[in-house]
Length: 133
Image (cartoon, rainbow, N blue to C red):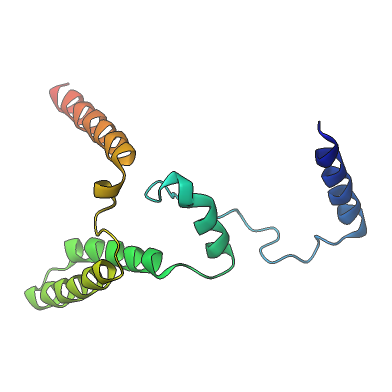
């Protein structure tokens, strides 16, 4: 262990003994293990820090709302509901594009696209294997 590591560990242990970590928000609650595989790997730590501080970049907020609306669109039964959701989706996608962000992360991240393609191919193959059995 490096000197800096042992010093950090010593300070942390001393703070624990003094009870400085006893009244932290979320104490005793399960960790929020959000799947952030859609966020490019180089940006994950920064996004997690911002999220924990309650400050999400507008791009992330927009993408989250777009994702939620897309899921809601699949559940909407009335044509009027679908039309309202589609209008909102169009607006949010336009805002995202005007901020200079790609609407589709797969366009920007070929590594992510390749991983996703492999995952989808495996899922399709598993479904085919199940249906053939």
